[in-house]
Image (cartoon, rainbow, N blue to C red; front, side):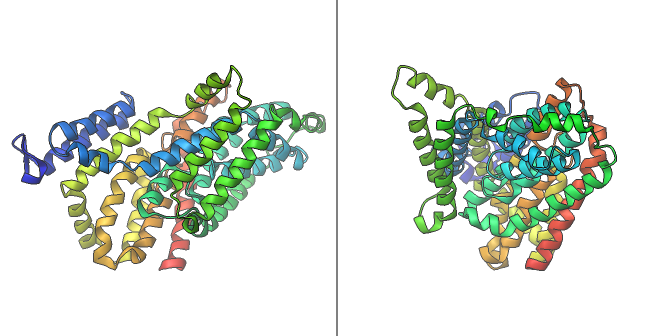
Length: 443
C-alpha cells in the first residue's frame, strides 16, 4: 500500500484524501444524524486503513493527557454528586439573599459559573436546573430568565479554568499550560463578563421578578442540610477535591501532568467511596465507571487521530502559512481574527472539533512569528472565542441543548429563535469584553 509520505494514497493526493475524510466526518457529526463517537472512530480508522497514517502514528496522535484529565474529573464529579453538595449550595445561596427573586437570579448565575469552572458544563446544569425549578415553583415565578441565564453562566464560567471547558483542556494539554495559567489570564475576563450578565438580566427582568412574602417564607423554610444525602462521602469528596485542585495549582512545581493528577485523585476517591470492603464494593465501582461519558472519550480519540492525519499530510501547516500571509504576520491581527471567527463558528458548530483542528495549525505558525511566547495572545483568543461562542445559539454547546430539553419537559420551552434574542447580544458582549482585555494585556 502506498503511504501518505509518498504523496499518493489509492492513486489520490494524500492531502486531498485527508481533507475528504475529515470534511465528510465533520459534516455527519454536525448533522447529528449519527452518534459522533462512531463517526469519529470510523474517520480515524479510515485514516489508518487508507495508509494516510500508520497504526503507530495514529496512537502517537492521541493526547492521552487530555483523556486522563477528562476521565479523572468525570469520576470525581460523579462520586461527589452523590453527596448532595451541589444542591445544598444552590438552596443555601437562595436563602442567603432572603429568597429574593432578583437576588436569587444573581446567586444562581454565580453558582453556575463557579461550578462550571470545576465541573463540565453539562454536569453543572443537570445539577442546578432541577433546583431552579424547585425554588421558582415555590416562589411562583417564571423559571425562564433563570434557565437562560444559567446557560450563559455555564459557558462563561467554564472559560475561567483549565478544566472548565473541553477547548481549554485541549489547549492546556497541547501547550503544557498549568491550571494557574488559565486562572491568571482568563478569570478576570470571566468575572467582568459575569458581572455584566447579572446587571443586564437584572435590568431587563427586575419588574417581573416579584413574589409574595408568604412564598419567600416557604423557600426560607427549606432545609439545605436535607440535600446532603451522605455526610461521610461529602467529607471524602471535599478532601480529594481540595487535594486535586491544590495539585493543579502546583502542577508545574510537582512535575506532574494534569491528567496524572486527575486520575490519581479519581483512584483515591474510588477507593474511599468503595470502603468498607463489603459485598457491594464491586457494584459501587461499576456504577461509577458507568458515570464516565465514554461517548465523549471515544469521540476525542477519533478526533485526535483525524486531526493528526491533517497534520502529518501537511495541510495544517499550509493553512497556517496562508493565515500568516492574510494577517501580514501581525500577532495582534491574528488575535482578533481568531477571537471573532472562533466565536462565530463555535456558535454554529461543535467547538471541540474546531479547536482540535486549530491547535496544530496555530502551532505551525509559532516559529514564523517569534515562538510560543509571542503567540500566546492568539492561544488565549482561541480559548475565549471558542468558549464564549457556545452561547451564540441554542445548539452552540451541549449544556444549552440539555437545559432546553429539561425546560421542555417542565413546561418552560426555550425556542431557538427566542433564545437568539438573548444569545447574540450576550455572545457579542462577551467577545467585546474579551477583545478589550486582550488589547490592553497584549495589544
